Image 1: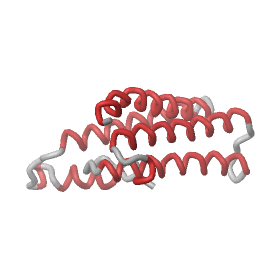
Image 2: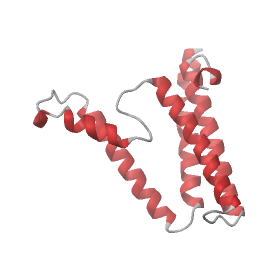
Image 3: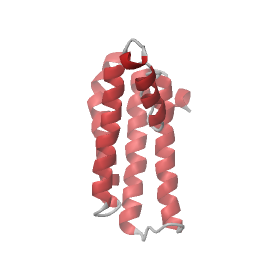
Image 4: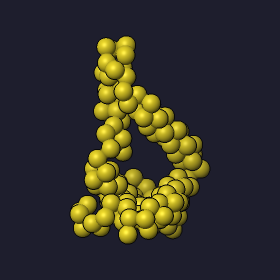
Amino acid sequence: MAVRIGQRLAEHVTRALGIEAGLVLVAAIVAAAADVEPSSFWGDAVIALLAFAMGVRNATVRRLAVSDLTTTVLTMTLTGLAADSRAAGGSGRGSARRIAAVLAMLLGAIAGALLLKISLVPPLLAAAALALLVAVAYLPATRRAA
């Protein structure tokens, strides 16, 4: 799928972010309009939309090939941080990036959990808005690559 979205990397990232933002926005609309309960059709529909959005993101991250910044597997980042640390006899290279990734995921999880106390819609809208914001911010890179 990563190859089909766009040949140039900048185009790929922008399109992938747009697709992700659209899918998460549709999930937010479904969550706002329908009674989303576990094991219900609408609950499964929201899960399917979000799973597809996450798949698009994972395909994009894989294509970018940035080590230690996986979007769904925090364990590998933590393992790399510990195994390559100076305390474990490693060089400590990449520690700042790994710590930043862990902190970003932690802060995102806390924000999402707090928003879920209100309803399912606010975290979905926040995620869609953030993906759209990043896509818009990335547009200059797309134009430079053209």
